[in-house]
Image (cartoon, rainbow, N blue to C red; front, side):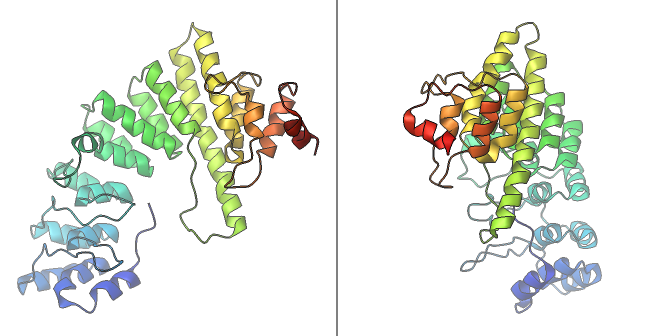
Length: 338
């Protein structure tokens, strides 16, 4: 998710309204001020709600988590702050969070540990939240999607009752976000079957990400793309290693996975490291997709509207590994020649 707001942001948000005085003290980690305000009758669980284009940031306990203020966090718990209250969430970024889910999302490991062992509810969502989303929206899934490997490690050690669907959903989220450390933890912790691993591999192969900052410069976007290409390839390597170990004795199944992934990977230049990985591991550059009968080379030559060009690096890599050009039409051959 996006970087948490800083102190100046919360000063502007809470400073002019005494109703949010405890929120302001929590933002600054001022435990004595929190105690003074509560002794004077301030409501510990008053909720900051969304106004205009601004998100709501919940209670003072939520703010202590946002700002990573352990002294304020401890003071609020000592005074009986509600640990199960939902904040207002954030449009298109996250659902409404309890303090423990927000702490997981932001990587506040010690706060997560404290709330977990104090008995905080672990899967509280709004009443209108779909049941299937509640079932899959575990703390493990949130930690996996945000790349919080230390917290994933803790959750695995604290609870061994994650269902098969929860295990698969968490791995899919981690892999789709290219969090290789989390993916490796989950692959060791749970016995994923062949079908699930292959499904997650295809999901990961098709995943792409844009920079969090919409106004990034061209150089920043290129650097982000290169970094993401490497991260995707690292996750793909972990999945392929797990799959190869699972199908030992039936190498044709692993070969089939490599071949089927190749056209999906080849269509985008942002997946170049994963393309090279598949080729290095023996994917057939002339395999025809079962969906459309096209080879990886034909897919790489498709001009994508978002980047207005074809995958030039991918074309070169495929040709280096023996991709045949006799399956191409004349227009595609001219692209290679130029």
